[in-house]
Structure formats: structure tokens, C-alpha cells
Length: 147
Image (cartoon, rainbow, N blue to C red; front, side, top):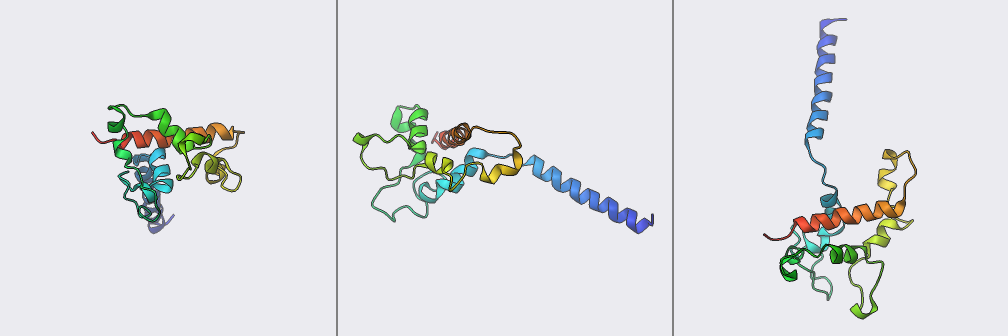
């Protein structure tokens, strides 16, 4: 093999290897990715209720950073999960203005597994997958709480 080809092969291997290392060093935050994709448009990147869609309707958007403060210092994990899921409406609570993400993440039109289809070669329980996504999102909202 010619020296230029050897040098090119080594350079190519270094670039490919270096790129892989860069990606591996970056931590994947599933809850943040879901929040940024579904919630930030209304609640804002920091969760303060100041997203680009805030103020477009008649409903005031909640400041998600104060959930613990408004609940005597305890993050209302189950209530937050239930609000995000939203599939069990409580008639006494009035109309539901926030999107029902549980149904959205499970619907056949927006199949929950569609973006991940290439990663799974085993049967899965779609309801369990949706629950894990809502749990990740709820946990991320918990991390947004003001200290």
C-alpha cells in the first residue's frame, strides 16, 4: 500500500473514531428531549410558562418551576404524571386545555415506537413504553423545580 493511502486510511479512522468518542461523551437526556419536543412551546425552555405559544389563548400557562413550592415543598409527582398523561379526565376539574400526551404517545397516527423502530427487534408493550416516556418527562419537570 502506498504511503499516501496509508496516511489517508489512518486519517479516516481517526476522524471516524474521534466522532464516535464525541457522541459517546454526550449524555442523552430522554426527559429533556420529550420536554423540548412537546412542552417547551407553551411552558418555555426553563419551564416558567413563557414559551412561544404562551399568551395565544385564553388559558394562563403554568410555571412548572414552582410546582413543589405550591405543594408545601414536595414535588407532586403522581399529579404531574396524571396531568401529562391526561387520559383519565375528571369531570369536576372542568375542561382540559392541555394536550393529552398519553393518548398522543399511544395513538396509531403518532405511533410511540415509530421513531425508535430501528432500535428494537423484540415485541414490546406499547402501554409500558408510553408510561416510561411519561415517567421520564415527569422526572425532568421535577428537575426544573426552583431551589
